[in-house]
Image 1 (cartoon, helix red, strand yellow):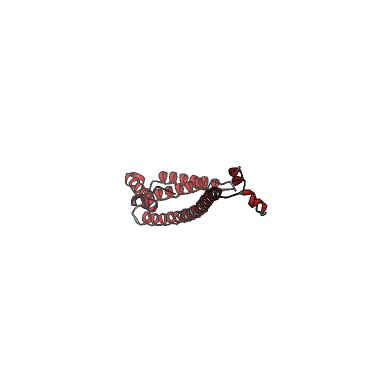
Image 2: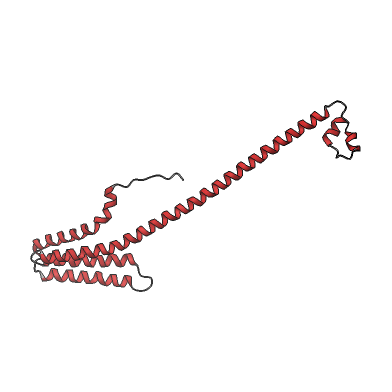
Length: 201
């Protein structure tokens, strides 16, 4: 019932939202840096990036194949392949138009994929909170019922104790009356009062 309240820092909340654009921008910057250091129009470097990107895509295809495919591994492999394509184009091309276009497409695709996981995560979080609230209400209801039952039992026990005390006082007071004879009650057909009979004896 007493849960610790943790306030998330705004940077922690914003980090997942900016992660895709940071990742694609980093790849673009590294590709352009590679371009400035001799990768522009280099067939060997372009071929290397094509081979690496194709290998990553093939690994993603194999990882996602079949019923027991690993979605995380496949997603990582496809993301690596896309990053290699963007870096290869940014490194090989002269000028900024094609790298910027490819960066924009890659960023849009990354946000599209991330949005799906964000929706799933938000749905799971809402379902967890609802389930927690339902369980909390059930426990609170059980606690209220048990509290009422306990108070009722205490009240009944107190009333029974008060009644027993009152009855004992009444029997004692009646036995102390002058001229009280339990045999007269028995002769009249009234039930015998054991405590009174023992006191009289």
